Image (cartoon, rainbow, N blue to C red):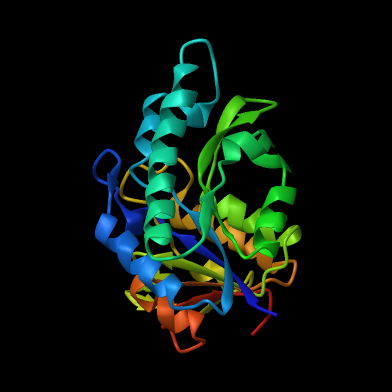
Length: 253
């Protein structure tokens, strides 16, 4: 049976977050080539929005909820993230990888900014047929706020509860979680209090590294480890080699 690996691609590595929806096509090609070299792995992919969604969501104040003045922001923000998702799927398919985009706006609802419902069945069926679902951070309808932004990290937190996953890796633009310029090799609930983690320097309506760690620590409370590493070490991670990143675990040291 194939190993199932959930990979989150950071929005900062597949887009230029300083611009508006500037997709890093060359980076997507490199990622697709790496994935195509691992037919023994069943992938689930999630990617961040980067500059294809965060600026639009901020501009229309969707992080604050929905009112009569920003309804159009749902379409505009969703259109931006779908453009990026399509680029990711196209890169994979151009490299012989069966992949299909799944849009949270169509499959999820939230309550006060947190996922409340998620139609998982199509994902499981795709995985059973060897097809890679590619999900992404998105605007979703919210029973309290009207609408909200659900990050890719929140999706990473939710997926293993419904679909079996053997390993989770988050490919970012940094080597891992840093302290005084050095990678922290392991983080748990005990050690995270010793860290000082800044917000993303670019437009990010989902909390940057802080939000990422909170989702992963919540996942670790249920016994599921995850790893944060630099994108350049993706193949090392997939092959089980040293990747130089940070493991987020529920284990005490």
